[in-house]
Image: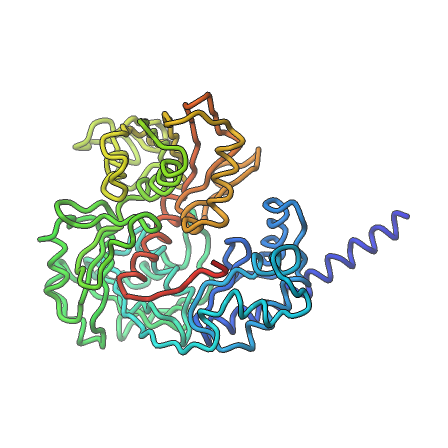
Length: 481
């Protein structure tokens, strides 16, 4: 009996592995030829391994209570690979589950089902033009943005990283920049190949040719001499945060727009994708992608306010230390931040609570906020203490947020976990802006305490990329709707 069980277990695993291995070239082909990105219940499979594909399918059972087999989703992927598709994000997990266990009337007619769900992108021409992108600055966020841009390299890629701009240019600088992109103590090794071209002062990564430009001011650069034109400049230095400062980018030859990876000042629109990205207009030249914390809490707050109403609240962020703090005790112009970041919890201020109102004005004046910097290098936690407009309970809150994470317009911003064992390092590399920790939810009548994790580096960088895509006028519908 034990031997038979072991053989069945091995046979089942081998079947899953074989289906996953058959899926990988189709996933790559769909992206390279059509700019179609495949996912399973929100988990992207671009550049995934066979094991990643299997794990993504296993996750479906946690959401639906029913196993989704790879042999059930593979026919959908195979059918998609034979279609003429416009750029889109297609969740084959949701399609497969719905086809086999949900709304499909004719379970034998897969083609008719797919046409009913994907009609907006089937047999449509791709008329969207590629957009040049320049990274101004190459620190923590800049290098993660580079990874995100490079992982989509291919002939159908719409956002093309053409250059990075940094200060200096000392001997050995190029190799050090490439090395920092190649290896990361938090996010691990770069997924691919990186070499340098010293003669042309460039980095070559997975087929991308990235010019490295040295400059002390944005308006000193002529991008056109590198074949770059009409570029979107992503300023991740934080040095210029108002319209005058960021406007320097627009004085450079070859640029069209600029976006800041920090809260903008003055009249600059602060965009939290998923919440107020509809405010991005074709005529906008300068935008801000707000802060990592604002991106984490605003989508969750918006969802809760629309469903339950929020009358007041306090946001406490438990935030990993950043490069702004000192490694050891030393002078710092800000209070407490001069003390050693790896050795202390440091109470400091955050503008995230007030910044929420810039993206979601309904909560203006309703929130207070503070922050504690803690000795971890990445992944932070926002604790939302909210007074709601009506009484509720833990089950209702968690069910609502679970459905929001899977099936709402905020599915790319909000993720959800039911694990009792999850800790911060488990969430390094999360592409969502926020991950609701349902096991920690506390509800008493109309008082709610919600714990929201966020990868303050990678998750935020994914939000920035969504803003850049909208600034470029690119559309990638998420299907099924």
